[in-house]
Image (cartoon, rainbow, N blue to C red; front, side, top):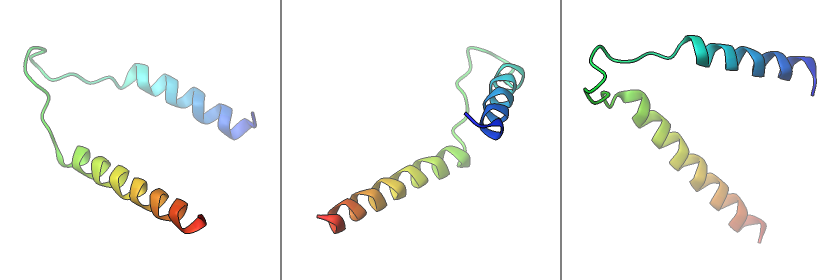
Length: 58
């Protein structure tokens, strides 16, 4: 593993421990925001492109 990758992984692990945010009331459901919609759309688009590339290679 090169130095950049190791640094990124270590920084990510530390950030996950420090930046864990919870809503004020733990029993309240988390809000469903625009970021989740963007992630879902990006995953769907990526899957579509991967499928299209695989079909083109055949």
